[in-house]
Length: 294
Ligand SMILES: [Zn+2]
Image (tube, rainbow, N blue to C red; front, side, top):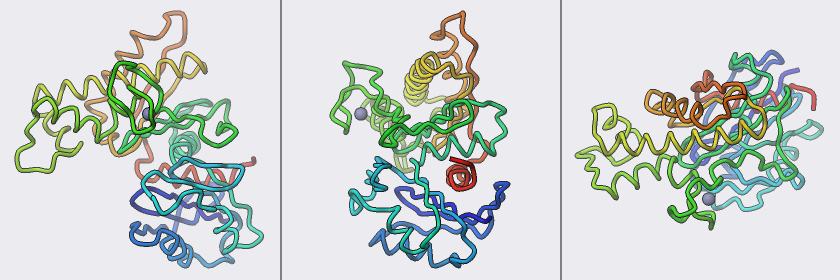
């Protein structure tokens, strides 16, 4: 049975047909602009209904799994959008399964990323920070579908206010925009390039002490949250994905040092790797939702 895998991000929608073994084909991407519902239907138009036996969708959240609705932070036009019903309307009779985009990244890495671990934590570090869990070979979504909302674990109660209403969330220290904001506030001068996370990573690689300090702080905060999650859930492996996975050379070693320092010596070590599937991790996870038994 061929399934349709859909990845709903804040800036683009992607989709592909997936074979039961996870082989992706006929993949396409549409940038989000204007009416996101029209973009969704444009994407669905690319796939003949008779080729689709089931549908798996990974979406930016928050989600309400029970209602089948999504409210992606970066798509203001979708608040409580009935994504599952919308896709079911186009593909009647096909089962449609939904999960968070970071959960799909974790599931994709578990299924096709070759980690060899039955349980893992996936962390998406991008404009925000999300996470997903696979525990004992099964994805864990939580009752509403928002398990793994790692970006809003508080790491510094005296830190900066977060958009979620709390103070000092991981996201205020280690998301791409937060790192840039923290560097600019301390006097980082990016020169002629746009002040974004890529420029900050380039500055760190060139030895800029401000950029290096901001990356070190972000990695320490990520490491602290990963260590606590691993201690809570007996995890042995974490995969880092999202746009900042491109800065794995700056993040992974300090994350590993924090993990070593914060883990109880009597527990198993936790390994950390960058995504093997890169931008397709979420699509593989969406395919896994549709292919694997529930
Ligand atoms: Zn927050």
